[in-house]
Amino acid sequence: MIWHKQWIFGNWKMHGNLADNARLLQQLSTINNNNAHIGIAAPFPYLLQAVDLVKNNSIVIGAEDCSRFADKGAYTGEVSATMLADCGADFVLIGHSERRTYFNENNEILRKKIDNALACNLIPILCVGETLPQRQSGQETAVVAEQLAVLQGLSVNHIAVAYEPVWAIGTGQVANSEQIAAMHAFIYQEILSILGENVTIRTLYGGSVNANNAAEILSIDKVDGALVGGASLKADAFAEIIAHAKTE
Ligand code: 13P
Image (cartoon, rainbow, N blue to C red; front, top):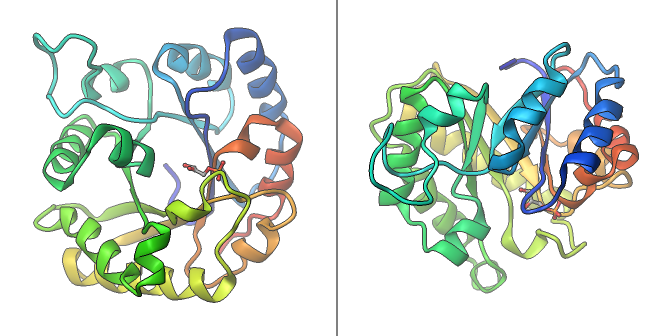
């Protein structure tokens, strides 16, 4: 992983098929922006395909989740961090809001996933963010602080977090620059106080990032990249977002 560039990472969620993935990754492989570190979080069955298709360039591939259980065992349906690393993944999303919502993932579960990822040299990207009622009642920083508390006691010198306000995901309603700037500054400050002043941080913004708003979002202080859902499924839109990345 490259820590001094802006990360433009796609999260395919439950989308894709072999033919579409191949076309998309081949188009992405031709993109040339030295300022961007490009990554794709793919569904489990497509990890090997994705790793194979990007192996001759600098795109990194990761998973959208990993098991709370370590290594291997009688856990039907689960996929361990060990298996992801074995397939050539470099990173894994942890605690995406869709997993928190539909699978009741809490800090206890998420900490196990983070520990498992780190034990396999996968970079965990911890996703945090408040719901609309939480923001409307002024609780957004308290909610995000509670989510970041999962990092307490970790011994790492690099950490990646994605701030994804739940109300901005897939809605077309992007957070405004002031909201993003304030939360990213808060996340930096929290991480430095939890993990120490020497930790290297990447804080990505996610939530309705598209070709039209990427330039503004990526120019906000302490926005170290973007985690892109819907727009990462279209090569042209994703390429336009990537074109706005800048070296810091
Ligand atoms: P959208 O870009 O589709 O809003 O999704 C954001 C997201 O959830 C990325 O993880």
